[in-house]
Length: 419
Image (cartoon, rainbow, N blue to C red; front, side, top):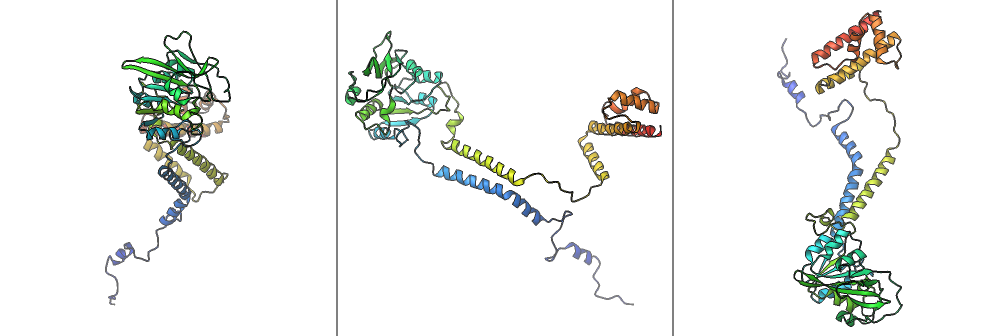
């Protein structure tokens, strides 16, 4: 009998089986899935999260690119609204005054040196911030300042008093200050008064019943003197009122006395003072960071609520694969061995033995260890100390001790069953 020549050479069949071709089907795992199906399932789960993150990044990018150069902060030099002061700042800039807009007290203190003007707009300041501003060598212009700042800047020579209602019509300044004379008659709220015990001359303008709208004092500095001007009514610098009467003349006269003007509009969250050397978190973040952060927080909350409602209540499902108890036990044992958790493993063995012998002897689950130990001791003839050491002793120090403990517990169970 001859062997056909068309049989494959030795090893050819094995090589053919090991070499995949284009018709080889995708490898299927034991759970009935392929790599492509698993990737598709992961994408379906993550696509909404990816979409939300992408929209968030897009909005942040748009806000960063299209951030407006103006603001809506009252009395701010970049606010073109009725409550802002952009008109005065632009006119001062056209006249050659360098207007420096700051929002932190520490920045204002460092920038306001001799030969400059420091403007402080209405705000709530900490006592240490007020004293830091009062100690600068620049000329101070205080608009609507509180009693703490006014008293610190004038050494107590000027204070705040209850301001009466406006008279309803402009009235003359009643003082010889050149800036007041150029402004002429104005309609301002008067809420400043000079201390009768003041040691230096205090100039009061637009006075009604011993209450003035403007108070000015001279204060000595290491390099000479400086002027402190407090105006109780700050409305004369606002965009909606600066063109009324002589408000523009008063604003330009007070703020344009020097070539440099430091315009402080304090940030409500600012706690800096002259002694601070490290920048605060707010000083290194862009102005829109707070708005974007709040918007992102709202998006996260809404997305969390939406996903929680979409998941719905928990549904019990049957396991796709039945795992044998022996496999589970062996797997747990391997985990204990890998983690060297001999104490945990010993506790599991002792608890199982205690449960078995307690059921055999009719000891209830609520029984204390002493009752169970006594029952086992009577049933097996062992001493109570030996039984307690087996069931409630210390954890084994090594693997050999753990194996010996398992053997002794098994012996104890067999003795109880034979009794």
